Length: 255
Image (tube, rainbow, N blue to C red; front, side, top):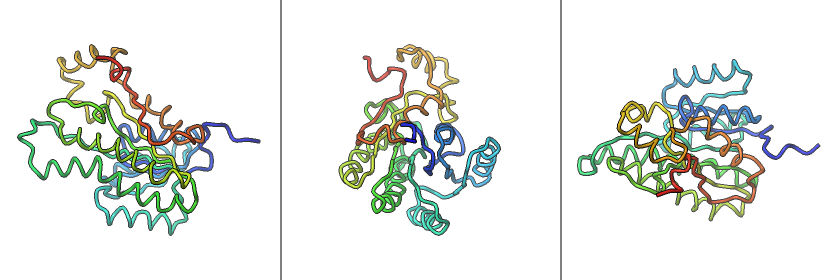
């Protein structure tokens, strides 16, 4: 019997930055579609708790705590997965941070930290995943972009630069890896209810701006990224490549 179009049965998904927030919601959604999970984060204790919570729901979960901005650590993590016989079929590059301040006040170290976490990590992890997907001639890479992949706002310049880079990195991955049966696409979340946005959701003026600017008149919920993620991770998207899907309540569609 043919497998359902959106089924992820028999697939293994690595989701970076998945101990909480958007990454955790996406990981749970992929698991509900049938995927085995490899969770990632830097805080080993928090990652272990997240993995245990998912296992208690019946999901198959492996925890891999490593720093996605450290090239050597990324290489070593994939070598551990190789040794354990774990093949990554789906990669979600989700790890990210935010630092808000005027552009003229950013220090070089802050700039590099945001760029490395949000952009360089997707290159490091994506490269190692692709090295293993290419011989198998199949694989799905999903990079998490942002509305900032296409637009800018004050006080988030390095984040904007990184997420703009994610859009073009995704296209570069598609340009080089599509012939090997790999699909590389991105998701651009709008303003979502996450810990990273707590300072914004608790600011009445900014909260009113988001709701007024978004046609849906509300913030997005992390679980609302799951549909796009499952689509891009499944065989339903086998001829979709180098694209970014904005999940933003319509914000990017209007002036």
